[in-house]
Structure formats: C-alpha cells, structure tokens
Amino acid sequence: MPLSTRRAIARLFVVLACSFLGGCASSSGEGSAVPPPKAAPSKPPAQSECSTLIDVLNAGVDRVQKMSLTGASAGAAADELVAMAKALDELALETARLDIKSPDLARMSADYQSTTRKLAEAARDMAAAVKAHDERALEDAHQKLVRAKAAEHPLVESINHYCETGEVRPPRDPAPEENPQT
Image (cartoon, rainbow, N blue to C red):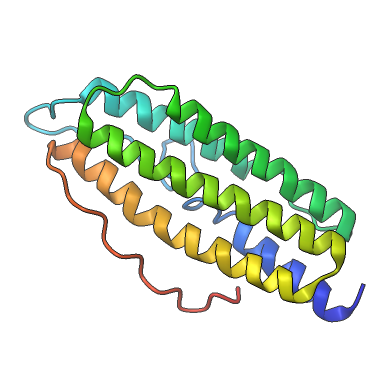
C-alpha cells in the first residue's frame, strides 16, 4: 500500500477513533453524544421522551466508540469501517423506533437519524475507497465524514437545550473544522 494511502487511513482513524460522534464517553455520561439532562426547576413537556432518546443515543454512541479501529491493514480497516457503518445504521433504526409524541423532539430525533445515516454512508464510502486503494475517493469520503460529524454537535446542543428547558432552539451552524485533515 502506498505511503500516502497509509497516511490517509491513519488520518481517518484519528478522526474516528475516540472522537467519533462527540468524544469518548465516561461512565458519568460526561463526553457522551448527549449528556443526561440537567435538573431544571420545572420539567420540560417531554422529559420521559427526552430521557429515552438520550439513553438510546448514548448507548448507540458507546457501541460505536468501543469498536476496534486498528487499521492494521487495508482489508482490516475496510471491515472495521463497514462494521461501524452497520452500528450507525442500527442506531438510526433504534432511534426511529422510539414513540416520540413531542413534535419538536421528534424533529430533532429525525435530524439526528439523518446525520447518523450520513456518517454511516461516509464510513461505507471510506471502506470502499480503502479496498480499492483509491486515495481520491478516500479523501472525498473523509470530507463527507467531517461534514456529517460537524453537523452532529449542534443537534446534540439543540436536544440538550430542549430537554433541559422545554424551549426549541434551532441548531447552530456547525463550526468549521480547524483542521479537517486530522
């Protein structure tokens, strides 16, 4: 495998390894994709729905974060990326199965599902590029992943804000990546 392909794969694993979908989770929920809602003086209208959604998202993110991303070889890297894409697709399906009655929370959940599916698609595209040793396709897939991941954080903030306050706040535009190459 050419050195530049190995570097691209290594760069991919830096992006995906611990920071995938919002950082490494701790047992307290700190750093999870969606931290547990903080206690608020008055309960927002959909507190039980919020708790259920947050639990499902955090469990799915934990599964993705625990996946092995060794990148020992191009074949192993591709297999690991396909497994990650399947886990992301499963997270989107689990989230879609929730019976969320709050229209606002249902919309945020649907947006998160869409982002999760985009991340899964980018992981599959990367796997295909790695298998084909196609550096251009790998770079394109990497950029697709960076864009999808950047959209995830504002969604998490919106879900948290709604679950803490009951107020809908549109997601902020994702901050541009300071160094999307890492």
